[in-house]
Structure formats: C-alpha cells, structure tokens
Image 1 (cartoon, rainbow, N blue to C red):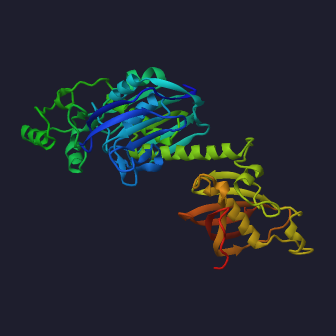
Image 2: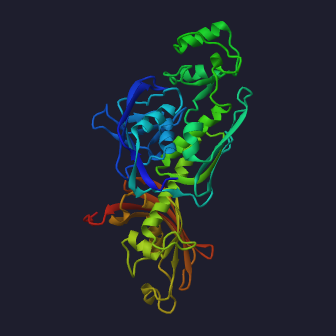
Amino acid sequence: MLELQRTIANPVSMSGVGLHTGTTCTMTFKPAPENYGIKFIRTDLGGRPEIPATTDYVVDVSRGTTLALGEATVHTVEHVLATIVGLQIDNIIIELDGIEPPIGDGSAIQYVEALTKAGFVQQSAPKDYLIIDETVTYHNEENQIDIVALPLDNYRMTVMVDYQNPALGSQHTGLFDLEKEFVTEYASARTFCFLSEVEHLSDLGLIKGGDIDNAVVIVDKQMNEQELEGLRNKLKIDGNVTIGENGILNSKELRYRNEPVRHKLLDLMGDLALIGVPIKAQILAARPGHMANVEFAKLIRKLYQQKKIVKKYQLVKKEGVVLDSTAIQKILPHRYPFLLVDKIIYLDLDKKVVGIKNVSINEPFFEGHFPGQPIMPGVLIIESMAQTGGVLLLNSFPNPEEKLVLFMQINNAKFRKPVHPGDQLHLEVELVNRKSKIIMMKGKAFVNEVLVAEAEFMAGVVDRDEKINTNK
C-alpha cells in the first residue's frame, strides 16, 4: 500500500444518467491539495456547496448511499467512492451539475478509466491510515448481517452473500491485493437486482435510470409475455425483454461467475470510504448491504476520531490509559487545586467516558472538611463527574481546549457513601442529550465498585474568552 498521499494530475469529466433518479449529470474529477480528503461539490447550486464524503453526511441508504448537506444532495455515491479507494486516491474534488453521478454500465470501470486517463500525482504528506488494532464487529440479527474488522497491516476484504434464493445461491469472494486485483477483478462487476424486485423498486420511485444495459437482473420468478411487455413499458426499455435460459434477464452474460458478490464487495468498499481515511484491516462481511455498511463505517469512524484525539493530546501511550493527567490539562482549563480527574480509562465518543480521581489526604479541602474526620465534599464529587464528562465533548468542537463547560443545572443528586482520603473514585459519565451548546449528562461515582454518588446535570459550553454574565 502507498505511504504518501495521492491525488490526480488533471481534471477529467464524464456525463450520463443516474441509476435511481434518471437525471442527466456531468461529473468532473479535479486534483485537490494534501489533507483535503474527498468532497462532492454541487456546481449547479448557489454557493457551490461542498459535501465531505464521511458518514456524518449520510441521509439515505435505500438501494444506494446518499449524502447531503442542507439542500445539497448527491445520490448513489458508492461506486465513485469505491473507485477512489481502489486507486488509492486520498484527495480529490468531485464536481457535479446534478444530483446523481452517471451510472455507466452499473459498475465502476468507467470511473477507473477516467481517473487513469487523468493520471496520478504523489504528494508530500503521509497517508493518515487508520490501523485497526482491535476487533470491531457489527451484527444485525433481523437480516443476519455480520461485518467484522480484524487487525492487519494491509487492506483485505472477504464477502459472502446468501439471499436464501436459488436463483442466486451462496457466493463469496476475496480481495487480497488492492493494487493488483481491484481494477482487473472488481471494478467491472455490475450492480444487480432480482426480477421480483424490479416493479417494486420502480413503484418506489427508484431505478428511473435503470435498464438492462446498466444492471444485471437475476430471474427469480416466471413471467408470461404480457407481463414482460408490461415490464418493458413500465421501465421504458427499448427492444424485447425475455427470460434468459441462463437465469439472467435477456440472457445477459455475467462478466464473472460470481459477479453479484464481487459487486457487493465493490459497494462495501465504497461505503467504507465514508470512514474518511484509508484503513489497514481485514474486513469480513456476510450478507452486507448499504444500511449495514454505513452503520459499520460509523463504528470505525468513531474509533478513528478517538484515536485522533488520543494522538493529539497523549504524548506517550500507556497501557490501560486513554488520556493521562498531562493530556487532560491540554483539554480542560482546570488546574491545581481544582483539577479533579487524574486520567481517562475509557472513552466512547458521544456516549460514555470513564475517569479516575485518586483522593489524597493532601487535597486542600480536607483541611476544613472536616478537621479530624476528612470527607470529600459531595459537590466536588459532582464536579469530578462534570470534568470527566467534558471529555465527551471532544469531537463536538474543532478546538475543545478553547471552550469552557459551565454548570447550568443539577438534578437528582444523591450521596450514598462518604469518600475518604485513600479512596479512588471511578467516575462513569454518559451523554444523555446534546442540543447545540447545551449538554445533558448523567454521572455515577464508585469506590471499590460501590456506588457513592450520582447526579444528572446540564452544562453549557462557551468560549474561554467569552465574558460570562453572572447576573442571571
């Protein structure tokens, strides 16, 4: 795999009809600077809105992956993104004068040809690989979908499909060398659907640009001549429509014996591009689809964001520690004697954080609370929770070190056991709700697995240099 970032050398354009919307669009690929990433630009809309290709902008996954930012939408991006991943391109501008890229023949080969014609440029910055160092799993019981990422210092992908349908049967495929196999073995695998789905998809307003030249239709039901003619008229297909002897509508020849599962791998590769960075991992997927792919990509993207935070603030990696006291001081404004969290041992962004506070006899508040019988003030236990909870906001703001988190409300505070010098507070804080700069959190404090305090609290986030109005 390449170690330096890559873009294209020259702009290149292509035009055609979108698979689902049936609209005509011209798409132009353009070079982009280092660390730019992948962005779609709607040139036909005022302000030329840019939509980053990440899971944060996915709005629909019905028979394709749709991105949107405000009113700007781009449908069916997965084949384009798979091509960009397959050609190991990191930075690229994708301009469109419509809402959906041209579908071509239903595969990614036309995008490969266009980008290869444009040429490639090696950039100076190193690739920002996300190296998977722990197993990540996704399971959907209802649809029996499983996707797993395993640690590997490379990029490999294995996919299995089994639709419990004799017309397709069970198929599997594996990509083991991105540079050698993507273009020759996967880029030309076309999208497919079952004959029994076609009318339903049409009734849903999808496949408006679909025809037998840009999709493989697998015959899983019999239709008489009258029904086939109705289907031809409904889909506005030129020429005859016949039930093929090979199990494919109009006897279309497959490019590979297992072309459908190869296309599923192509879709998965494109959807995982929405992680936002190239990955090194072994991906195993059983019966994947766009919804599952995107949910799995969200899990991996969150892992990337957490690793990025740790890399930014933690200078030395320590076993069992996500953020140490030095890292915490780069994030929170609190200092002695009011920094009340010593380390973060668990972080699930936007969900939960676990911090540790070692309670020492040297704490200045013990001198007066209480002489001869030192007890940690309950309000400071809540403050410890709040400071721990502040770490949950790390991915909410570009520069969290420039923010202050202020109490607005405390509810249901309960102090169940006293906390003494020598105790270690285990602080668990969950994010309940977040609206703009108002955050609701719920915290619990334990000593030796015994609950000693809990509370719900509301906090507001302000800039550190913002003048705080205390006359409220």
